[in-house]
Length: 187
Image 1 (cartoon, helix red, strand yellow):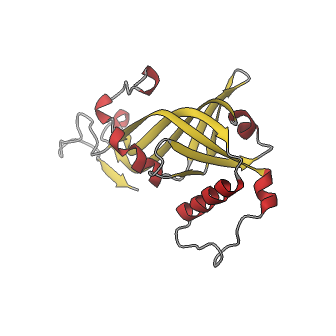
Image 2 (tube, helix red, strand yellow; image 1 turned 90 degrees about the vertical axis):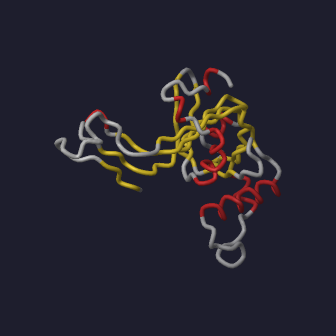
Image 3 (cartoon, one colour; image 1 turned 30 degrees about the vertical axis):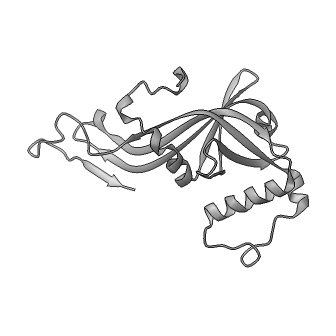
């Protein structure tokens, strides 16, 4: 594991064995990259399957600055978080959140094969809308739309996964006689 993927703050929260499950459950990927010397982070819907754990897919308009830039093989960082609960403490500085997250590092390239694009778009639709069926609930993607849409395959070089679970951990939170309240609002 490289330095960029090493968890430095609360390394006991590392859950690398949960990374694929977190990516399967997630809805929004925040995609970070550097262009023209400046950082950008853009939210994307994405496709991920544990059957291909070192690949995830992003799609967007061909005219998109991010799609054009990332499709050229630039480095990319993809982050997905599942927010499980809000943790409230008897002391302001001990408020927190229960979460599971993955940060993946890799490079992207453009998927050009039309049949592969169709298969991946169908998989993405089924992932977000599992009760909908191609041909019954919606029509297939027309070829002219595929021609104007970029699909990127991110080849994951490495990733890290982290989770925070449990009650508030402030110094007064376990004391029922202390002023204030403490607990977790499950989401």
